[in-house]
Length: 107
Image (cartoon, rainbow, N blue to C red; front, top):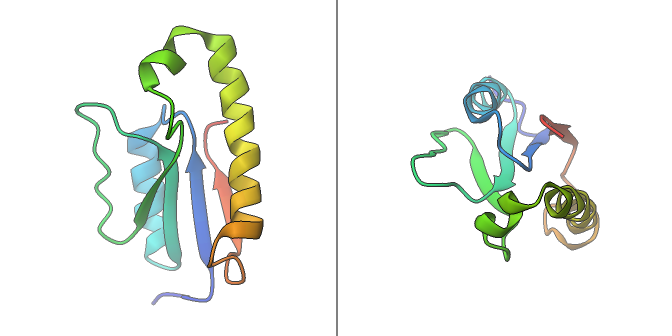
């Protein structure tokens, strides 16, 4: 039984906890509409969610090799992208009227 009225974004910018995120999203997706928001996937990483959507938002225009080299740059970009994500969801997303909840998993 799904409550389609509720839309949940599960946000994990750094993707340190991919297996946890997948289990969490799959469980949520049984009841609500779930979008998993994160960085691009590295070689060997997979998002196996048949019941959920995946949205590559974080570090989209910056190579991950640059992000991974400097922890200060990564921290700054992390904060900036979180801000841009909130702005995007509130003002530019075509689904903003139906957006209900955001769960940030590893910030």
